[in-house]
Amino acid sequence: MSGLPPKFARDLGVEGDSLNAINAINAILRDLPAAPTFPVDAMPRPCRTLVKEATSAIGCPAEFVALPMIEVVGSAIGNSRVVRLKAGWEEGPTVYGAVIAEPGEKKTPALKVAQAPATKLQARLRDEYRKAVEEHKSDMREYEVEKRDASRAGEPAGPPPQEPTMERTVVEDTTVEALAVILESTPRGVAAMKDELSGWVRSMDQYKQGGRGADRQFWLSAWSNSYVAVDRKSRPEPIILQRPFVGVFGAIQPGVLHELGTDREDGLLDRFLFAYPEPVPSEWSDDEISDEARDGYARLYGKLRGLHMPADEYGDPEPTRVHFSPEAKELVKEAINELRQEMYSPGFPSRLKGPWSKLEAYLARLCLILAMCRVVDTGAAERVEETDVLAAVLLVDYFKKMARRVYVRIHGDDPDDRLTEDVAGFLRARGGSWDGQPSELHDELKSGAKPPTPDALSRKLKTLAQKHRAFAFETTNRWVKELGNQRRFVTLSLRNGVNGVNGVNGVNGGQEEEVDG
Image 1 (cartoon, rainbow, N blue to C red):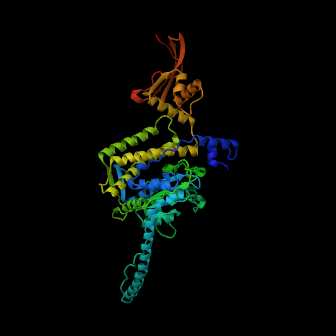
Image 2: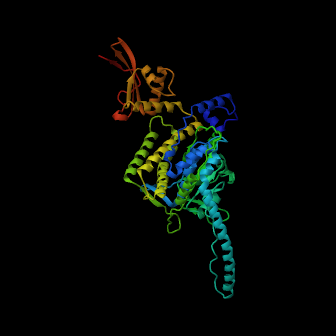
Image 3: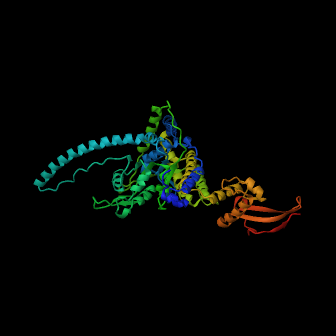
């Protein structure tokens, strides 16, 4: 095994090449949360068949095709639509996605399938641009003649013909300055496909003095389509982008995953939807992708790209607002509240609060993407319906589980957080409280972070209750008539928890004498 990444080693408190480091990382890999199954049936109808066929033909996990597909169709919608949750809260279909896998796990062929309609359209736009360039050359020759004639006549010449620009659908390795020029001429937006996300992160600000610049800030702002201004030496004025739209997709190896976060806690890592599945054994398969599956997906992309994109009086995008049906609105409110309840539940890892807060936005974005795919596929009215929200919830549930898996891979797992979460779930399943002897609690509580003995568990729970204040822990000595002596009992309860249980009264962590009968 090569040297452990420095930040990862620091988090573990070990040296990079030591035996302790190797043991520590192996322990984390053993404790990684299980990889969930990707919910293919939650994808838009024209995408499902292609995902299934490509997965079988290529020999890769379904998410290697599905995740970039979500980013690609989102970029096809681009700045043409936003979904309105309420006044002041709208979300576009921007997606930052990443697949995590070792070399040779078929990431590239899977990406080609998902990206194919965008690259094909890019080829057509390139040809149209080349023809426009030739026409512009001809127009310029005519203009020069007209300009000379006007000069001889003592009259002012008209404005020269405007130079053509090439509309883009996909960009690859490009600087922020070059991307700003592309977005200026493609206000709808583009999909940025990165071969290696670690290299993308390393390249940020590398051309700035001292390695400090605004590249990371650009990507942070672009995720929410927020205003950015990009200065270029070749232009006297900055490029002003009122609504920059750029989706991001790339791959990264597990061993360098920590580089995506770096030492900066600026939220860039939190903005990514991750797919980190178990490797799929690659064997020869006679399965192939049908033309019908490819064509169905390509038609969907073309219809989404063809959606009208309104503009304001300054020529900047003014997306059409898509609304929720009343039934869908209630479902999305419930799903958002559940996300927030999870964030503030006992033992919820603090490092996951960042991605969980972004999953609120992604829930709305996925609703928009799924709704618009359904709309262009069926000709229905432009509105988010219940089925769209339910499918988005399934996808968000998958990405929640993947976020846990990825963050444990980067930062390790805190056994105290895991135990607190497990205890909270244990209490919720029992109406909010539990009472019994320590040995009974040790037997009934199922948790991989549980101390090995009943006494050790009681001591740990007392400490956690004092730390989190989310649940109450109490011990008492009670006379047990059947046994003719006193036994120690433990009472656990959620504060302000299920069925009105608050668990506040009598909590002092000490001994309290009670007599039964």
